[in-house]
Length: 56
Image 1 (cartoon, rainbow, N blue to C red):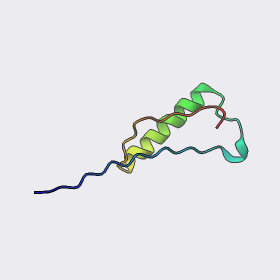
Image 2: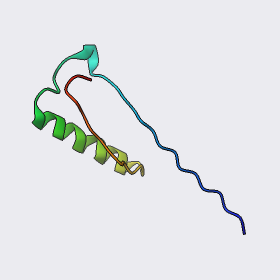
Image 3: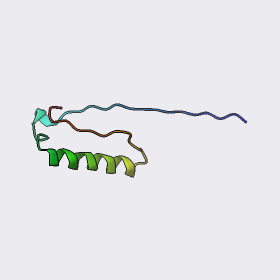
Image 4: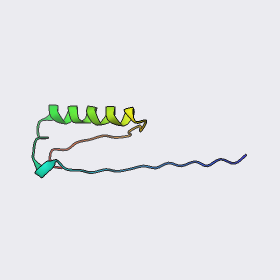
């Protein structure tokens, strides 16, 4: 019996609107990480690494 396996990994980079620097506060970045992980889990997409940086 044959089977097909697929592993699709995505690296997504985006910036804030007008490159506004509102991700400079670590607490906000942690909340953003938690929000993205929750959203990805809700659509059945497990995340390996979710990270926000202040200058993206």
